[in-house]
Image (cartoon, rainbow, N blue to C red; front, side, top):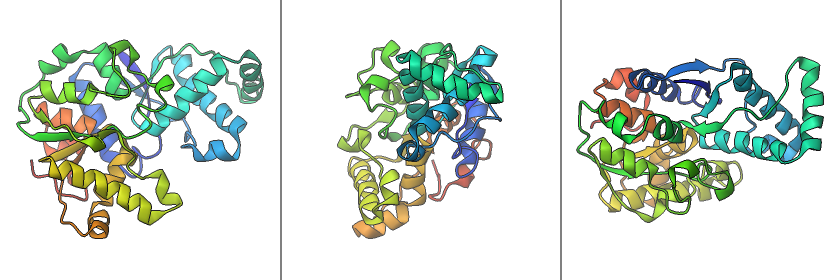
Length: 287
């Protein structure tokens, strides 16, 4: 099994521990990873607002890198997943637009064909490895109360949701809960697990962004969470890096470790905190 990995910007720069733990967990599960080092930023929804055609062209090029290799394109970031999947959906349903994009791509020697599937790492391992096989790698049962936090773009809009083959309802997702269960942790139920973390809101309204972040943290804390896990590095930045400022804004003491999804897997697989980059977090991870 081999994936073409689109890291996006954040997993290389702001949260390098995500890339580190992903490569560690992939190796444990027998997945060969080819990192698309020549890929560019997806635009994160902001380039799209400025120039949609440029955004489509850039992301068609990113997708074509996996197509050239004949591999599934796997992402680590909810927003990257949305931008790439939106590009694929638009080009695959509009031949004229696809032709125009390819005309521009031909100037630099690329071509988009639509042959590669695009899938977030969470759903890729569930679909290709499966819960039963993943459970065989558990060496250190978690024994923790864990709050799954999906965020926005991995489940919204529902037409781009990539968990369909797993019969997952994007309105009531349970993919992370299923992983937590086989890793022998306890998944807590709380209202905020599919809400917006406020990351993109921060560009326009920082106080509102901090309130959105604080509401999630308080909800998880009130329901007994000992840790939060998220498949999105942007959500991780808000929930971990901004946890202190959000807690101050909410006038509440909050201290909840926030894990990237591969780190949660890696802990259960028996890897050390250093091997998973847990020492790179703002909120100490003492689990």
